[in-house]
Amino acid sequence: MTPYTGTWWLMADPGVSPAAVAYARKLVGTMQDTGVPQAFRRLDDGSTVHVLLVNGIPKVTITAPAPKGPPPRLDTTDLWVPRGLVVYPAWTAAPFGVGLPIVPYTAFGPYDPENLAPGLNPQRWTAGGPCGEVLLSQDENAGYPRDAKDVVVPLLYHPTKGPVFEWTGADSYDARQPDVAWKAYRMELAPLVANYPDESAEQAATLFEAINDHRASAGQTVLNLLPRGHYRPAKIMASIMLTAGSTAETSAGYPDTYTTSADRLTKDGYSAELAYGAFTGWARGDNPTAYELRASGGTPASLLAGWTGDGPSNTILTLDVGHAAFGDVGYRGGYWCADIISRTRWIEAGNCSWQSSDAELPPLSWHGFASVNLAWETYPATYDVDHYTTAPLVPLYAFTTAAGDCWLNYPRAVAPALADTEPAMGRHIYLRGRSIAVAPRGGLVWGACLQAVDGGDRLIALVHHPEDQPSDYTTQGWTRYLRVWWCDIPRRKHLRAAPQRTICGDDAADAWGWKGGDLIDVGHMPAPSTGGSVPAGAATR
Image 1 (spheres, one colour):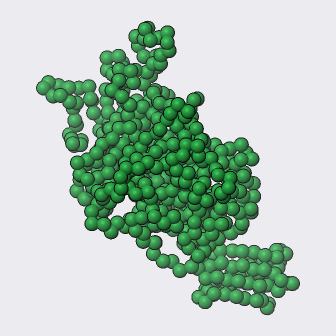
Image 2 (image 1 turned 180 degrees about the horizontal axis):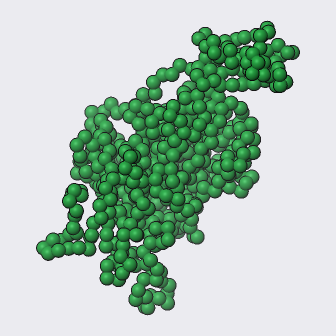
Image 3 (image 1 turned 135 degrees about the horizontal axis):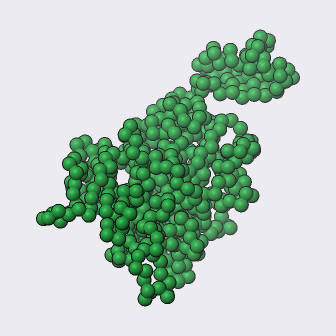
C-alpha cells in the first residue's frame, strides 16, 4: 500500500497509536489507487479505521481500542439451578403432552412477555411438541434470576474467566432452604437484551428474524429464543471477540474453557440425545448439537447475504436440527455471532437418581429402566397381539443397535424422532438440570455417584460397553462386564460438583476427560462373596 501524504480530515480518539495513523494513510492510498470510496478496518490492537472519500478528500475516523476490564462479577441471581421434580404431563386430549412452539397471542409482539412465558395454559402450547417438561419446585419463580437483563452465568463456568457466579449466602448453594410452597412451572423463553453501551438488542433481533425468514424459505423449523435461565453463547461470544479483536473459531486469545466453539456451545451441557445425524465419536465437540457463525462489521442484511452466499455457512443456517430448534444472536462493538442449537429438553433429567446424604452435593440422574420388569425391558423383542402367548425363546435382536443405543426407548409422539423419546438406557449424566457428562466410548450408563476426595469430588460412572460383552448372552447375560470411569472435580466454595467443561472422552491429557476404565466382572461371585470382583485400586464406595 502506498501511503497517502496529502490533506485529510482526521478525527481520532485520545490515545490512538501512531501505527494506527500510519495504517490509515496506507489504506487511503490504496483506496485512491483502486477507486474504492469507503473502507472499514479493525486493527490487531482493537483500533478501528473508517475512511470515506468525499469529493476526493479523505475523511478518516480512528477509534482507540476499548479498555479491557475484569470480567463482570455476578451474584447468585445470575445462575439458574432448577430444583424439584420434573414431570412430563399427558392426558386424553394430548397423549404426548404439549410443548414447543408456543401458540402466540397475535395482539402482542414476539418479544412481549405474553408470548415468551405463556405459563401452564395448555392452549398456548403445541400438542406433542418437544420441551414439554413441567418443573414442580419450592423455589420462588422456578429459581430464575429476578432481573431479565442479568448476564446469565453458564452452568459449566470458569472460576475467573467470563461471567462468574458468586454466592454470598452462609450455606452451600445447593443446601439453601426452599422459598415457597410447591408450584408448577413450564419453560419460558428469554428476550434479547443489551447489558453494555456498545451492545444492541435491536440489531440482534433483526438478524435473528432474518435468519428465521431464511430458514422458513428453506423449509426448516424456525428458531426459538433460548430458554430463560440458560446462558446465551452468541451474546457472550460477541464480547469475547471484541476483547480479543478476533473472529476466529479457535484462538489462544479467548478465555480458558471458551477457546473453541465446542467449549462455548456446551457450557450449559450437551443436549440430552442427538436429534439428527450419526455418531462421529465421543470426545468433546463430536456429535455437535449447536453451531456457530461469526463476523465483524456489516449489517444484518449484509451478514445474511454473505453467509447465504457461502456454502458451509449456509449449510449451518439451514441445518435440520429437529423440531426443538433454538437460536441466539449477539452483537457488540461491531462483532456478530449467531448460533443454531438443538436442545431437545428444557430441563435435562433422567428417571434414575443418586442422592448423597451430604446436603451440599446435588443429586445426579441418568436414564435407566423405567420399571422393575427387567425380564421384559432387558429382553430385545417386541410383541404384538399374536405373540403374547408365543413369546420367542431367544431374543429377536441384540441388546444394543449398531450405533450402540439400547434396543428399547419410550416414545412421546406418534412416529417419534430421537427428540421425542426417552432411552431405556442413556449415555448422559445429569446434574442441576443439564447434561454435564457423556459416557466414554459410546457406553451406556448403569449408575453414577459422587465421592468426596481430597480437595474435590469424584464423579464415578458404571458404564456398559457393548464391545466388552460375551457373544453368548444366553448363559452370560447382557451385561456380564461393566467399566468403572471417574473424573475429579475440584471443589468450589459454596458450590460442589461444578465442572468447568462437559466431562466426556477418555483423553488422558484432558482434565475434564474420563479416567480409569477398569473392567469389572459383575457375573463373577466367588463364595462367600455376594458381589462382583473389584480390581485393586478401583473405587469401592
